[in-house]
Image (cartoon, rainbow, N blue to C red; front, side, top):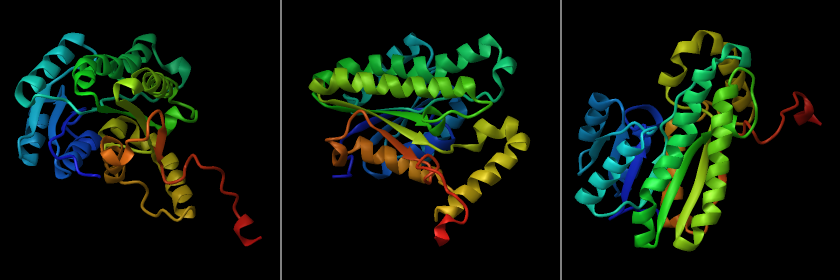
Length: 260
């Protein structure tokens, strides 16, 4: 039920980090993967490393014409698109007064409008097939608020809402839409703010250690969640938010209460 043989999966933001790991995981499950990214050299390298017919498409997720070209190219080469993983995203850290309007709009364009454009682009193919799975990579910042990520949080709350609404719209066409809400991602996104983030990261690690999840959440577990939602094992699952966060959003740990 978890095999993806004869399936075609298009993964955005797949040149590195979480997206690259998702593409590798789906390929290992038997899918023909198409990696899409604006980072051409890196994306082509990952596709070559995956092998087994993996393809790369240059794609700016904010441009409708790029989506049309990438989808047409995929259909021309592979004949179908069974899985779309809307993973491409950008991050900005800064309080509201330190987030310029153009930066806020940029995050919405990439993180929320990008998945909208991608979903529209694959609908015709998926509807004609009578089946499809669309997976949005959201975030725990799309489940709960946190200071200094207002733009990112807004974009990830937005993509979750979009996923739920489209799950309702597309269910009768056999298309499932779900969100994976990840607690982490590739270090490339957080690198510019890493020094200021260290106290938070240490706090999160201690938080997860308390919950019996030492070492945090590796990107492979995010990819495994996507694999599940892409496969027939989740045929009855649509419109959900699947947190992969080591229990970070499950509730509060009160020190000392475990001895009561």
